[in-house]
Structures are given as C-alpha cells and as structure tokens.
Length: 308
Image 1 (spheres, helix red, strand yellow):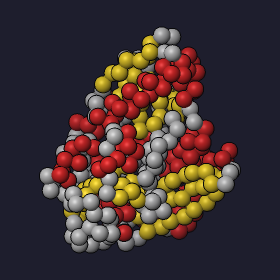
Image 2 (image 1 turned 135 degrees about the vertical axis):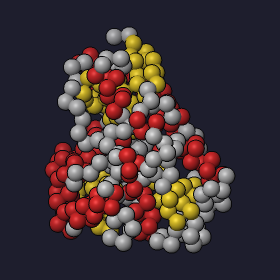
Image 3 (image 1 turned 60 degrees about the horizontal axis):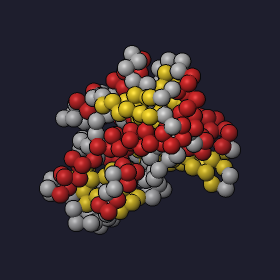
C-alpha cells in the first residue's frame, strides 16, 4: 500500500485533524495520504440548532457513505461526533492518544465563568454545555450558537456574545490557546463523551489498512472511550443530550465520572465509579445503571419531550 485517501470535513479544525493523522500515518508506516474534503449535513445546516436537527451522525454520515462507496479509504472524526451505533461494515482500528478533555471559556474581556456579569450572553451549540452552564450560573443568558471555532471566536470579538464555551483541545490544535479566558476542570464541567479524542474509521473488510492504522491506536484512550460510549449507549443518548462523561486512569484504575442535567440546569445527577482498565465496557454499563437508579432516565425523557 502506497497511498490512502483521507476523508474529512472542511472546517479549519477538521482539516488540521486530518493533516495530523496523515503525518502520523506517514511517520509510523511510510504510507502517503491525500486529503479529501467532504461536506456533511451538519455543515450544511449551520442555521439550525443541533438539538433540533438531531445530533446523531450529522457530522459523519457523508464520510461513512464515502467509505462504503470506496471513494475514500479512511475517515478522520472527532469521537464526540460519532454515534454509538457504527455500521457493521465499518470499524475504528485506531483511536489516537487523547488530547485535553476540558471545556473552556473565551470571553471578550478575559472574564472567567464566575466573573462574567449577571445576564452575560454566553454561546454554545452543545446541549450538555448549556445545561451545565445554567446549573453553575443560572443568571447567565445562555444561547444556542452554531458555526466553526473561528466563527464563534469572531462573534465574541464583535461583541455579539460576552463569551463562548468551547472544547479546549480544538483551540490547542489550532494554536489559539492564548485566546482562552478560563479552562474548566472536568469536575466543574463534565466533558462530552469522547471529547479530545480522534478516531480513524475504515472499511472492516480492508485488513491491510486496518493493520497499518492499528499502530496509531492508544490503548488507554480506547479503554476510556469504550467506557464513556457504553454509558451513552445504555442511556440511549445521541450526540445532543445533556450528559457528560469522563473516563481516565487513576492509580492503575479506570475511573468514570458522569453527569446528567436537565436543560434548565435545575436537576443535576453526578456519579463516579472505578474498575480495572480491561473492564471498561462493564464500567460504562454499571455507571449507566447507577445514573438510571438515581433518576437519569426521567431527566432524559423530559429533555426529549422538550425538544420534541
């Protein structure tokens, strides 16, 4: 194999991620890559809130279609965009080592979450971030905001928003970390399932490509992602549910912290559990049951009705 066609979305961040994967593949295997830009339905519907257009797979469907049609060989995704159900003809032989999982605040005057003025306009397209923001600061004017990272930052500069909430990993990758006013601890704002991790998808039947990509797989990151995505799957959540989960290694154990929050932030459940790294899937299942026992299903059903 001498060449791979690498499918990606066309945003600045998505292209950076695809270039990163291309260089990693070349360094580890000597295989050259060609970037193929594919516009997804999520990119085409920028005017609509994610919670309304249904978050499941809208940023990856066209990429997966291209894989199935064999017009590309691999696709690079942010794991947090990948639905829990993946077509059986496709597989993820590599989940790259995870970057920073945390959320961050970028504000016009450098204000932190606690220092933002009462009634400050804060934008984010994530239902999870909106719910946790309202839980932490019920006085803020939290608004839905779509668009690429650079678009969102411009809206803060223009004064349309006092602040925006973003994934820190995206700003780090683009070299914009200096724009961050505050980085929020995962204990304060629980990250999205898969946040900070990149996954490389290919056809399950393409053994040669799978074998080459496996060199980029990070076992610790994969275990964390399995735990988080199992939890999400059991709770039947798509990408757009107010659920946060963060799995990480602590003293040779895989620790999973998760929260479920009502859209208004008034109802907030949080649980923590640990298991050996090899039991990542079982850990996710147990955590889901603990949250269900605490009332998570009722909150998620209420969210579903509100969005319906």
